[in-house]
Image (cartoon, rainbow, N blue to C red; front, side, top):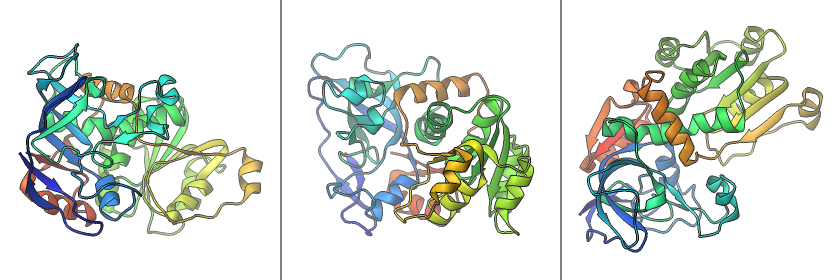
Length: 339
């Protein structure tokens, strides 16, 4: 089978041929129909995931068709279209048993720790498959697994956004654009913040009540003004920037929740008294869980979510490097590879 693999950190992907994998007990082979390309793939390329084996086939935002079943597999059949959950944990893992496999110290991540879906076929445990209840186009199904499920997890399960609250979305990229729509779906007043005029226009089209140009004046002061002077109830930070992490904290109001989604390895500064006086919570949100994928699919199927802007840049597998560069240069919100 054809794959695009990362041979070394800071290196381009290279085309390679590997044997078609055979599923073992409890495993399913999936013929990949679509795989999204996102910021985590750039993070992997830069060496952000310590200990990732190399060479590795990236790709964690995928959908496909069940192609072969290993021994003991039940509940799916050949020909079923499925979304793929990228995390697995060992049997009996206490974090997974508590519904939080994403934070287990023993996670094994598709496209980071084991080969992913920048390939024609990929192996997954049967429990990592999510079957949509109605047909969903493969590129759409792929981006629902991460570009939507990640901010959904952050807003619904981590920040616990409530109707009537004010939500600030920092960064209107693949994750932030979904966060705008999710905020409106959950009944919030949404303020979108970006340096890009085009992305601010996108935020408006997706339902943002207010937008703030991050490169003009003092965005923190403007957000606080729009939030009634005291700050926002929830801030979701979708930019990989320590400086923007600090801005997010400054934008949070009394009793507010600042949830960090954009990954940065740089430290940021915060004063304990600022958090204490506002009883401000600063929360990390790591990926998503399978129920987030199911929720994302349901919101798409009922017409709540429009992901058309995330599936406009579709490329063949051979153009994986160009897809990464498009994302790196900000030319797209998401690319989707079609093996």
